[in-house]
Length: 275
Image (tube, rainbow, N blue to C red; front, side):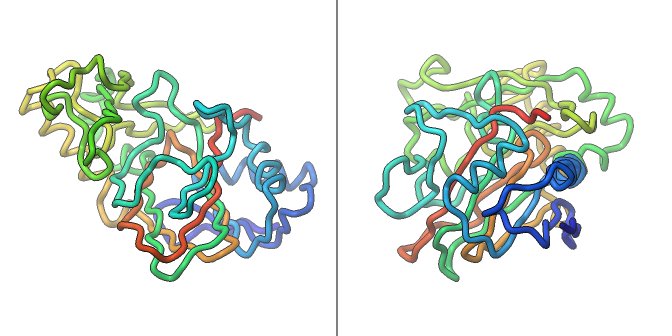
């Protein structure tokens, strides 16, 4: 097994491995360290059954059980059981489940059938973004919290920032999924710090208030660090690609809309990162 860092601000490729076979204890340790170091891993050219995908991801922690009781979903434009309700439009950068009290710890997608026109998954490195900030700005945001929001009834919610002040008539915060989290979080295992605000789910900074121009200006400064060209990477899928990332340290986006050509990916979510 070889871990080769991507020529990108986040991620590494795992080479020389066949995931249809169980990994040795040494290889499991290598994968875990690479995940902590690089925050996102890519394994190419795999021919996996569901149990192979499950086994590999479980080396990083237990799987999340979705609201319907299943542990697998499909990001897909096919009509299949357990298709995720993510639509086909462009998805803004986000951390999965940031609007929940306990956000998802990690996410994995395995490309079963994709076409050349399938939009990529793009990644933004929250650790690198935090470390790029001036020390005085790091100190300023250290004790601040952000309000994260998802209104499931918003027909345009996939591609628009979710803000309390933009809720449609008749909708209130009580109608939404929402949670408050620190602007800066500490990752397990590595102890590194990451920005935890996103252009999709972050409504406002709590300490400034939902209508504060000063709070919004601060958020935009953090977004600029997160989504700078030199802090993002886009992965264009080929069949057999497996990608897994730290959902606390890395944000992701679907950088384009899905057309009628096949885009069928198997999705697993980590409840926690435990080893």
